[in-house]
Image 1 (tube, rainbow, N blue to C red):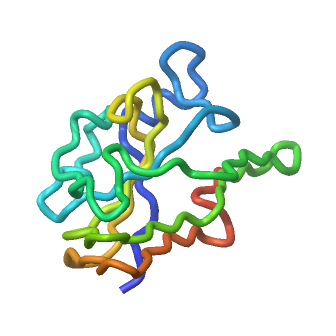
Image 2 (image 1 turned 90 degrees about the horizontal axis):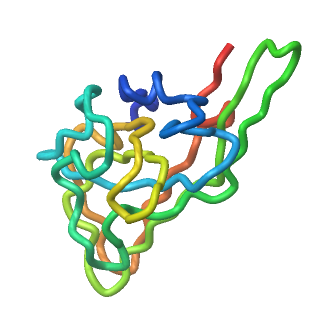
Length: 151
């Protein structure tokens, strides 16, 4: 099964572009964390990473709070008729231990500690949880049109 489209958290829609406590798509550090099927990652009313349950165990090269997303770009085209948010595909490598019980990926705006910061969006990677065995990788490949496009 292909991963689901990225779904915005309700509070993220309100925080886009806010000067104080907001989410700036053109700057800042964004991270992706991985969550189990027991997680509430798909509950759209969550607002900050520390509220989410069921992050996968910090093992096999995975750290709490996830990995930094590189190459983040906010591109406005036209008058502006559309805007696209994209980034470099992200690869998680299981090293020395498995990345166990993965089902969801969550993107959040990183502020301070690894578990703080507003949530932006989530995707269901599979219909059931799976594990990435040591020595293998999980690649999150973003769509050619970007993580999301506003038109």
